[in-house]
Length: 71
Image: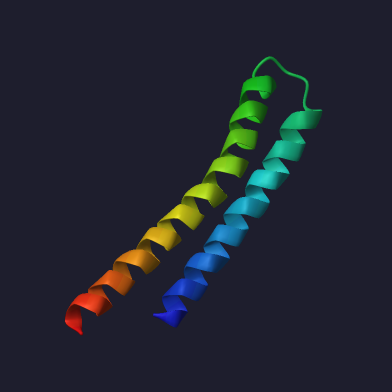
């Protein structure tokens, strides 16, 4: 289980670094589509960590409730 968590954490870090890079890139590009891509990149940069935190919190709570039911 620890190995799976570590792999998922590394994937999450790579994804966030890619999002930060794309946000920076879209900020400097001056085309008609770059503003929309910049807005989407900023939104995902905020949304993805929030969702990952929420999923991990729900997982911990569900796991704790399962352990309480077994005891």
